[in-house]
Length: 101
Image (cartoon, rainbow, N blue to C red; front, side, top):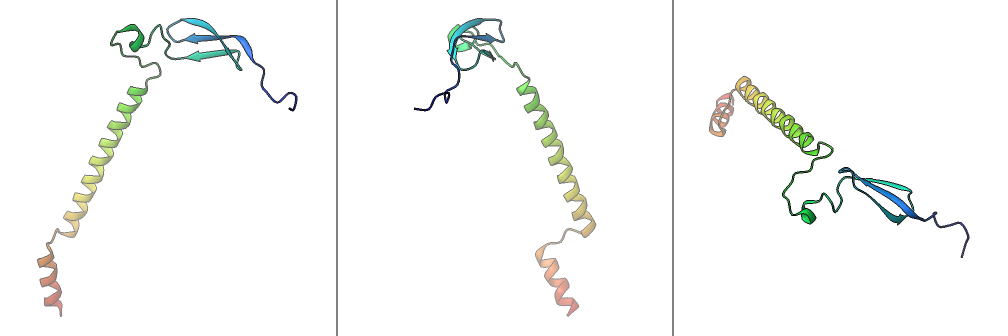
C-alpha cells in the first residue's frame, strides 16, 4: 500500500454546537462547528422548539413574497395586453376573417 495517502486522523477533534455544547470525537478535521446536537435537538430533548439558526425560514418567506409579486405583475401585464389587443372569442375571429375575404 502507498504511504501518505490517508489524511491525518485526530482522536481529539473538538465539536462545537450553536447552543454552546462542546464534545470530542475522532475525525480527520481538528474542529467542527454544527447547528444542532443531541443537547438541543427536539427529538432528544422532547421539546417542540423551533431552531432557525441561519434565517432559512426568513429567506424562504422573502422568496415567496417576491414570487407572489412577480406572479401578480405577470398577470397584470397579460390582462393589459389582452385589453390592448381586444379579447375576442374564436367565433369572433372566424367571422372577421370570413368578412375580409
